[in-house]
Image (spheres, rainbow, N blue to C red):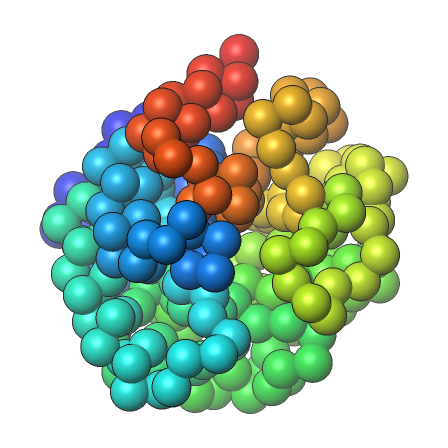
Length: 221
């Protein structure tokens, strides 16, 4: 996939969800490595979008990390999305924010971030997907496809049936997420997913570039 040029990351332009691997940070699963170290390897491997997801760090620490990650993603020509923290996303000039069903309502987030900010919404059912589309989400998360232990408050797996519904009934860009590994990635891609989020499969691997290359090969077949 061709990388975006720096002038294509103009903040005045509307973002779109790129196809390919959607990577997320998860320091507790990163084999003792920092988010910055892991992100450097992810971006060097050509991943087009990185989400910063942190649940336990102090805001000042997250801010300082995200300033560096913003610079790194700019340099790599990748999109930078921050999970949940709208204030943090605005403060560091991220490309977007990803919110869940229990966060601020989408319309209020849009009021805060403006029309050109990428907003993703996690959805777990057709009704939630339809609501996100109606409310103006730029993309939705579809999942968890399979069981996952990455999040402690995750709902039950929705399986491939919900993914199939989104593919056949909605035109909004989406990212499949939840329990996706190298051994089941082909199944998710075959079901119609063009953008796929993987967390521990990437950050929990000792050879991140090699793992990403293997995943990219599956997505390109």
